[in-house]
Amino acid sequence: MSVKVVAFVSVKPGQEDAFVEAARICVAASRAEAGVLHYDLWRETDGDQRFVFNELYVDDAAVAAHMTSDHFKAFGLAARDLAAARPTIIKTHAIDVAD
Image (cartoon, rainbow, N blue to C red; front, side, top):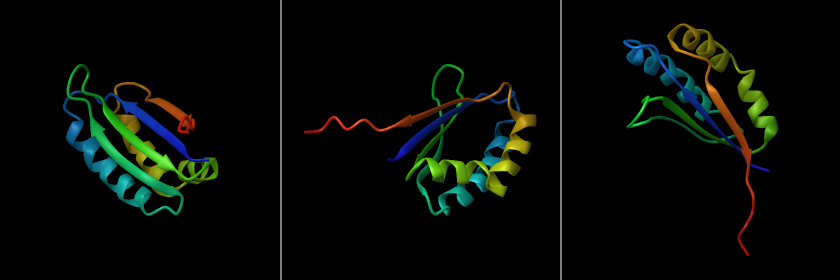
């Protein structure tokens, strides 16, 4: 069953460019992972203008593999100093409502 992960990250003022550069490496490497179907970085246009990771995996095992990857761990260390707070992460499974 596919898995959708959405992560919201608030970044300290003035650290936006550094965050994007750190994310660029993680996003590129994540897109090359075997179980990743979709991996993008977005930014809210209103409100807090949080950064939003939009991720789609083939299954829970692919999510687990991503979370233990070297590039994800390196990004986590870099982002820790750039983030204003802990990220909000939402993990979901698809619900088939089509007939």
